[in-house]
Amino acid sequence: MAQRRIFSGPSVAEAETRSGRVSGFLAEDVYTFLGIPYGADTGGVNRFLPPRLPASWDSARPCLTFGPICPQPPRAEAEEMSRAYQEEDFLLQWREGVQSENCLNLNIWTPTLDREARLPVMVWLHGGHFAFGSSSELPATNGEELSRRGEVIVVSVNHRLNIFGYMPALSLGERYAGSGNAGMLDIILALEWVRDNIEAFGGDPGCVTIFGQSGGGAKVTTLMGMPATRGLFHRAIVQSNIALRQCGAEQADRVRTAIRAEIGGIDAERRLLEMPSERLMRFGMTVVQRVAVPENPARRNLRVRWEPVVDGINLPSHAFDPEAPEFSAEVPLLVGTTLHEFSNGIGVPDPEGLTDRAVAEEFSRTFGEQGPAVLALFRSKYPDITPFELRSRAYGATVRECAVIQARRKVRQGRAPAYLYWFRWRTPALGGRPGVFHNAELPFVFANAHRCVEWTTGSPEAIRLADRVAGTWAEFARTGDPNHPGLPEWLPVSAAGCETMILDTDCTLDIGSDQDERKLAGSA
Image (tube, rainbow, N blue to C red; front, side, top):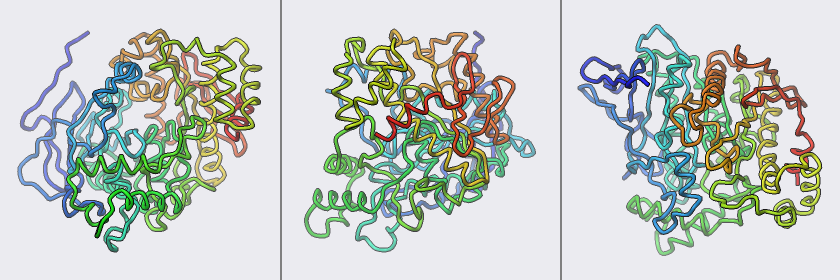
């Protein structure tokens, strides 16, 4: 393999933004700018308030390394280095970042700095629900290769998380009325920055796609329901999202009650403005623990945690419930899930030791009265799979049902198409135990299968699929239609249909073969 070359220095990679000139580097043939400020420091007097533009600077600002990330809980404390942590860390190669409330920054990968190029722009929103994560946490989502192969500009964004970005408004005055959506307002400011500056990086502000996975998919869904985003993006891709609804009034009240009970004393709420960021982050962890409900793999969308708040202003109503939002009716949607989503063999030393009886007992707890029927259906359709595989498929069906519902609600508007995908490529890593896990599609979307060899093994099969998937995402960003020569014909979803492209070694169009599974598991 040829040595990768990096070029840096005056005039190698420079662009003019409205705040000042930025200086990056050239990775082979892709210009890279990391940690560009799009907003001012959100700490101190700006905590919980809507974001503001950054102060301007004079000379070229070095943008060579990833910027700070929002304060957040550690993924695991030192005493919790479990088998699951070890295996997940091996597969995903997590990167910890420097934490700071001065975290409003973004990264850009672009194949050209020609203002006349007008390339499609893809804005990536990271996962971690609304509490964890960063734009730099995973090598799988590095935007260089997608930019190169797809001839697109990739932008990734850091913003406020957990209590810093999604604290339901307390009695702190009108200035703080938007605190429950501060993190989403950060992303909107980033999209406005893209609109105002991306031409300097070769981009087309009239052809912007927002895309995200897991919590990032939930952010995309939420943005589609926010009036202030109208015109800021033109396509949307939702990967492995379960959040058709956001934090409603009852849930917000539970969080507020927990905050007041935990902090106590006179002028309690105002003391949140003065806490050191590390202490406030830990305080937020305790608050969520107070309002937590028992984990149910079939009903993950019912958990109480930090997330955008339906405040009647920034977010007028739940984004996709009961119907798709009007503000983004003209925006084409690509949405899908992985086969096993939140139930996989990572950290499970003996998945083959699970029995049908144990699965039946668990399904009775998670699916209630429908538990026996769910088990019977999956066992009759897949008589040769293991109980563990059966369990994983059933829980994956509940997430896929959310994707189907979202696509159909979008289609019912009659203003833009929706396309469904189902990622089903199984990693051979760790003896194949992880299956098609949550996050499994990421190195394929970003054309990074050759980099993320811990879970793709770098096999020719994986690299070919990455070419297809990355080409799909780039083509959708360019035209609003995912069809390209590397795939069979991909039909948009019909009003009551479930036309789905299966992304695997052999890509095929499926017309609802799992309808009975989704209906039973998703409604149980």
